[in-house]
Length: 612
Image (cartoon, rainbow, N blue to C red; front, side, top):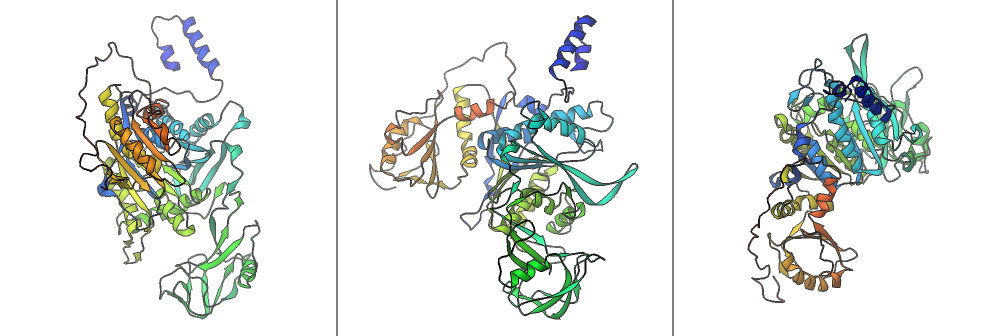
């Protein structure tokens, strides 16, 4: 902006100085950068984004209560705009790993051009890019929702100031909602100038820090290693585990000799064999136990707590033969330096296992790092990652659910450049759900208690015509299913068959939704609603109402049974809070009388009062 003022023609130096003075007076401290318009933002001036499901990619679950996870293929600015209607104030955790803007070849693209270190507007373009997206995602967070963003040294300074501005409600630094700057130990270093770089950062924010009393985990569980590395301070000792101790491995699994690279466990006596998820016989092992006193207390049948007051639920062996402790997590203060959680190599190694030795993309965040961040919220959290990459965040969500019985739901967003969304993001999680075979021939069981749906962004013109309104309503059904988390479409409503040009009906238990495209059928619907029982809930009705009138009078007799929302007004109102303003047109659009589709009788093929 400063440069633009200085280059203005027709102004004296005094006038330019006055303008610069106003600019500087407006913002005493913070970031000021050159605004570089983004092509996708210009597109959103003229078009409204919607989501359309690719039903050929739907992965169902036999478990009717399985969480529905979502992958959205499209630019994340478009997808976040659509989610501003379906998920405003509903997201518990957002994690993103955006391009780091290192200046390296083919790392960060802006308006279809790669941004390298020689670009004069390199930092401005990155800030324009990330600012719009963080502003949008903040609207999606719950008041106590958590926001995590990975970054390295190239943009950490600018990003911290930017996030402080976005997440602080006013200029008072005491009201900052920054929870901390986490330093992640990568586990391996790379040469970077005078020092070996062996860390990255994760900025942590909350919408309202006063609503977040530490990190609660009372609704979930936490697993800790029960052994540590051997050293002069960590003495090895023997411990006998009785037959029937929990052993999370396949039948027939057996460990002999010693195992573990750094945290060594040695077999002293007995056979370390698994049968029906338990030790087949007594076994004595030697290791450097981290919780020896708690082990004694737990195996003697006493109620056991750790040094933080967290209740011990069980000690158990994982499939790798290592002993773990599972605890009820109440309130914790995790460290800001993340050591021994995960390494960069682990992320790439796991992806190669899933893809049977191939490495479809590089620089993959490790599973355990994301699991740690997601575990800081409750086990029914809704999670969003709009720089999805290989899809680690969804994998971590499903793995946590498998470990603690949670019902977390995850939404991933990524474009499909180089076919990454279909061939990597979707394919990885498809294999995780269905199961896969590693290059060594090991069969990895699928996480079957998960359903996955695949959407693409599409567009409707923003011109306010009757036809565009109707097109938006017709295209909104997938949005409404996502918003209500209701996907089971029914062929009937009560005694009548549904009709795709008249209405759609979705139901799961007592939860039901109608999408009504033709107002002419409302009278018949009301009569049917009178005789139906919706349990403890209400029937949600979305009805096409181009003049915003939600047919309150028509539904008056069943007002205690229904919740009626007028479309497309509800969607347009949500979008107008976040969409860029339209550019004024010199001449107003000429409106014409549009032909309406010929009315069809929803009930034509049925006898009055008869069964479908």
